[in-house]
Amino acid sequence: MTDNRKKKVMLKMQVASITLVAAFILSACQPGSDTSVTGSVAVNSESSATAQSTMQSFPGHYQGYSKAEYDGYELSSRYIPMRDGTQIAIDVFRPTDNGEVVTEPLPVLWMHTPYHRRNYGGGLTAENYPGKALRLLPHGYVVAVADFRGLFASFGTNEGYNRGEWQEHARWDSYDITEWLAAQPWSTGNIGMWGCSATGGSQMQALTVAPPSLKAVFPMSCEWDIYPFASFGGMAPPQGVPTRLMRGGDREARDRMSVPVDGDTERVLLDAAIDEHTDNIETAGYTPFRDSVAENFGNQWWLQSSPHRYKDTIEASGIAIYSAANLDEEGPGYGPAFTFNNLTNPRKFVIGPATHCDWTTVMSETGFDILIEELRFFDHWLKGIDNGVMDEAPVTYYTYNLDRSDIGLPGWQTAESWPLPDQQLTAFNLIPDGLTTESAGEGSEISTQVDYEINNDNFWEKGIQFTTDLLSHDMQITGHPVLHLWLSSTAKDADVVARIDDIAPDGTATYYTVEGRLRASLRATEPAPYDNLGLPYHPFTEDSQEMLQPGEPVELAFDFYMMSNVFKAGHRIRLTLNFADERTTPRVSPTPENTLHFGAETPSRLILPVIPAAPM
Image (cartoon, rainbow, N blue to C red; front, top):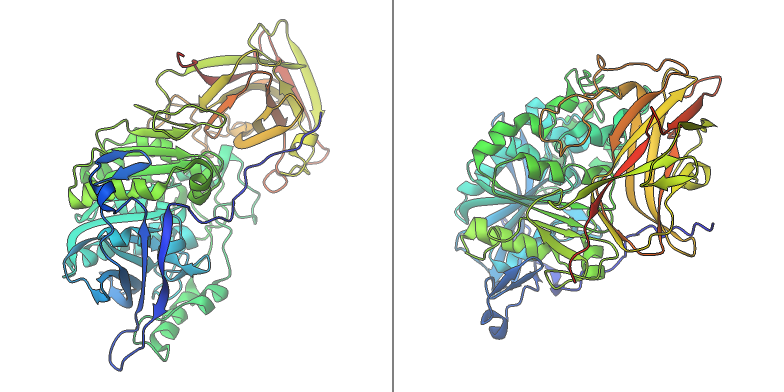
């Protein structure tokens, strides 16, 4: 079978519905005045008289509620003090009207970033970083971006790089920045936050300190319980190899890219800030279990930096939350579903296609504009516009290979809950030659020697594969698959990495990052400390560790990243298993042999959330 894998990739295209109205103009720096940058950007939510006469608001659509009435912006930057005296660098973009800065107080949208407050993707961070809040500015918002403490132009020290805001000494920075913004004469005091990935995470951290002026957040690709993101399936790498989440970086390179604040023309303040960065600690070091004390931090890092530990504070705040994830993004997309399901705050949830934070591709390929969702949400919560955004179904999600829609954009649908209320959890039994919904029969087994050289390039060539027969009809699978795998080994431990893909009649395979994994010694399950969506919950603590007894079968139960795909009639569903990740799996000698067990007393099975066909 040919395996011409069609992995979704990022398209280098500009969002069609977002228009750059004018080029950036550097204004002259007058003696005694701040250096400013002026320019103009906008969201094409429609500002014409015709559009304004038509009131329309539902996912991906917004007419008649929000007018792009400001023609540009002025950028200024400065330091603001935190409660301990540490100075944080911040850029502030204020709207202009006919070249004059607007003095009317407006709501503020800000981002707390470890990735450079000023520059990103060949332009301004505020315009180019996912969330792109600068493009909401013409609709009546001030936009701000602040460097993390201890990074780029900010003073202080950072421990943990892109998650350093969770350290105790930095914990209240998001509170202090929010309240500073709220107190400015050009602010209404209604503050929102935006961003994706690390800056989705910084919004979740801000929720845990609940600034009173923070009214709404839009965290994309954020965490809820950080351990499954950092060490998915408990497969922490050996000592000396950082997790994929915390691989550190080149502090000196970051410092060289730092941009001074206005007035610091001789870089005196910037150089002083950089001097304080020499004590930064890039990574937690060896932190293999959920309750491990971090080698470099001296705290239980995965617990301290997990939003679920602060659930009561977040709920008491009442801050509105619109979380977002992409189907094809691995670990960062794991958290938003749990954020949505575990909080009583006003909340919404959107799930798009494409890769990590790549809402540009979502727009270009499907017509769904995440910036319209941001605008609808912030208009409601920060301006009090009654646009119905909180009255509609709270979940909007995309399904690959689906033609129909209930919002006018093929593939997009809405739902009252996630997982979908009509999912039918269907068992596909593993048998030596495939996957079947019929009985697996008497017990059988397959043995294979562990191959430690497994990576994304050779995963499907080297794995053991289980494939359904040709499907007789279209089958939509939307939700969180779960694998129950019976395994024995000649070793005391084993890693399992499982992937699901879609096989077309011509043998072409399409993979949408539907992966699950588990380290066998951490297979123990227990009731979760939060709503785990009915999925297996593993404590992943050192005390829960139980080594294998050579040759003795045990059951491993674990979930996959969420998926939503229609497997077309004539296609097949394929499960591929490997037993190592070249970066995280410890190598032992002699090379172990693993045995998979099927049927009878050891019913290995893949549970898929099948969605009934919609009535014609």
